Image (tube, rainbow, N blue to C red; front, top):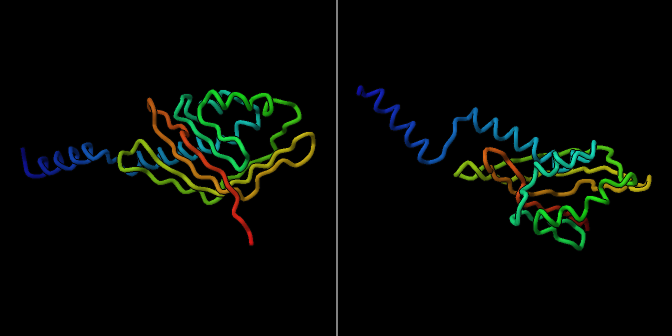
Length: 159
């Protein structure tokens, strides 16, 4: 094997060993994560539960912490909120992810995100909105598909 081929083989082998991906693969993953994170909120536009369920971990690992009293600690707990979301009294208006940042773990199959969320809805015709909510979360690539496994929403205290 020539020197160039040996060097190329070593670089490719080391890259695979370290779990590093070419920049184009990483950018494709970044775009998919952005789509999945947006779907965690955006599914409500068409009340597409399949889209929502496909965007989050469907197991005991899932956790969602919101500014409210209740912490959702597993996928089965998510289903308890379905009657509220599917009610004709709950209407999606729009959502926006501002300043979305995605950082990949070295393994390449885990990433975390941060953004500022506007989640604009109505309940019985009255505003039911989260504006400028801080949203952080962890996504994991499982069976070739990115899903949110943990998320936390909060509001900055303004003095």
